[in-house]
Structures are given as structure tokens and as C-alpha cells.
Image (cartoon, rainbow, N blue to C red; front, side, top):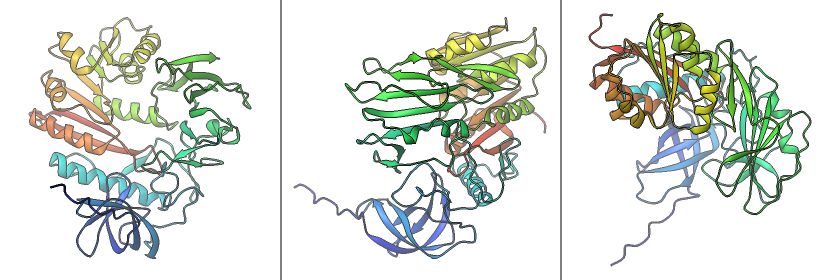
Length: 442
């Protein structure tokens, strides 16, 4: 006999006391019946009316928006962005919170993930519990930092550019994104008619005047004539192969970090905060303390940011191996590091390439894995290489905590952990953990 479909609770409202912040940009609350609510647009300690946006009777949890604030937190501010709020743009999570509170919330999330997934207290992770702004990043009180140097716009059926609503394919048309870097805003993407386009990536390189627009047309649509207010290269996502191809201008932008210039092609990965690359390189190098003659690995190396920093510091007697799965990123990394005779970049997945190298011992390791983390098998292999120190750069606290647990099982401990607020107004945070063999004295 077929079970009765469960009743949707979307639209139901509950008056609730808001509990702690949770990973993902929401807070935890419970209905009078004890059902868990993940509530956006709320702050810990508030009493709110929460309207369900996703979930059904009997579900393990419901998702909801705070649509009325009955008892506001002292950390609450009026969201400066006109597109923030329930049912609106999903790009930011904490427009309604003071900057200091945002960093505190991110620290609470990191601490909770460390405890739950790695069994570590902040003290055991060598972390003082603070989340720091990017190196030298100071924003006057009350101002929204314009930091995002890479913005992906979605286009609605009428040709207006905007941003996706939270957990939705629906487009929120906008006139201006407050967190977009000036170089992105100057392109005026929001002011043009983009009929026939599905999405637009706008890139403003750090340390150069390079600007790039990547257009993804809807199936069968013609590419528009792009005449923007300043010189800009234009790329197109091809329907037939999904590749990114040059329309006009350079097929890359030039980024600057650690006193070096890096070529980044076809919308390839680069940190989106203008000070992020320098901040992370400094944290990694201060943690690793490379020596002349060291053998180092840079895993998930992208266009070679950390490999270049390592190569500069280990010198002619040292060596660096980078591994990266993206073909274009590997081409860029080899170009960027061509001056170093003892740097090698291999293409492929880390878990497949590293065993084939025959390397059994290294001095230093940097790994900057994708959001899902490195995983148990890769961590076990890295631990077997007996590195003096390992730097783990993480954009997701949960993945970091899981992998730190695997490292602990494999004989490594966390020496220090630093956290940086490289994504203000969002729930995202970047961490740098420095690990060393547990047998080593403090």
C-alpha cells in the first residue's frame, strides 16, 4: 500500500527563540514540538517569527527565514544592501550583523566543527579563537567592503543581470552589488541588456588593470556585441564542449601576489578577495618556515601560487612538485614558474598522480584542496611522507575538521591554526592549519 505523501510545511510560521549559529549562514532554533529549524536572517539570542521555506512534516529539520524580529540582538544592524533579506539575493548571509559579530560567528562555527568532527578544542588546535580580517584590510565602520573581484551574474528571461536567490535558480535583478570590487562595478554589467545569455562572469584582476568578461549563452543564442566602458577581454563558454574560448582580448588576466605576477586563464581559480593571496601566502610561509634545499609538495596547486612562494624560498638546491587536475591551470602554472629549473607541475588528481611519482619522503607539504577536502586516503598517504611540516589551506571548516581528524589518526597534530575573514558579509571563512608529527616536542 502506497504511503500518504507528507504534508509540506512551506509557508508555515513559528515564533521561536534563536539559538547558536550553524555552519552555512543560518542559526538553529526549535519549534514548540521540538523540530529543528535552520533560520536565515536571524541572530543568536533573538526572538523571531520564522517562516518555513523548505521542509515537510516529519522531516529531520526545516529551513526557514526570519520574517519578523520580535526581540533584536545588539549585534543586529539594518542590512545596508537593498537586495538582502528573506526571499532575496542569496550571495550574502550576514548583511544584518555587525562586522565584529560576523567574525565572531565564523569563529564559533570553526570551533564547533573542530570539536564535533576532529575532537579538538581551539587550544588543542593552537588557535586563539579569533577570525582576522585580510592582511591590511580595514573598512570604516558602517561601510560594506567592496572586495569581490570575481562575480558571477545570472541573467533572467528578460535579459536583466542579477544574482541567484538562496537555494534557488531564480534571479534577483540588481542595479549594483555592494560587495563587488570597484573594478567589477566599473564594467556596468547590471546596466546592460543581456538577452540570450545564461550567465556572465566579471573578473577584475588584482595588481593589474586586466578585466575579463566570460559569457555563457543560452542554447542557440547569439553572442552580443560587448562594448563596455573600459578595455576588457571577452570569453565565451561554448555549448558544444563546455570550454571557455577567446572572443577578443587576452585569454587570461594577470594577478599579483608575493611580489610575483601570475597568469590566470579562462576564468581559472584565483582568490576573490584582493588581499587574500598575499594573506594566505604569508600565513603558509610563516607556518612552514622553508629552508634552503627543502623538497616540497604543492597539492591542488592551481596556477602555482604556493609553488612559486616555496620555490623562491627553497632556492636552487631545493625542489618543488605541484599537482593540479585542471589542464588550463597546469599550463598557466608551468608558464608562471618557468624560471625555476627545479619546479615540476604534474596534471591529474592528487590521489592518482602522487603515488605514481615514487616519492617516499618530503620536507614540506602545502595542500589547498577543493571544498570537499582531501579525504582519508590522501591524508594517510601524505602522513606517510614524514614531512617536517604540512600547511593545510581550507575554505570549508567542516572539511578541514574531518581531514584534521584523519591526520591525527595518522600521527600528525595541529601546531597552529589561523582563520581569516576573506569573505565579509558571507558565512565563508578561510583557515590555515600548520601540522607537524605528533612525536615532535612542542
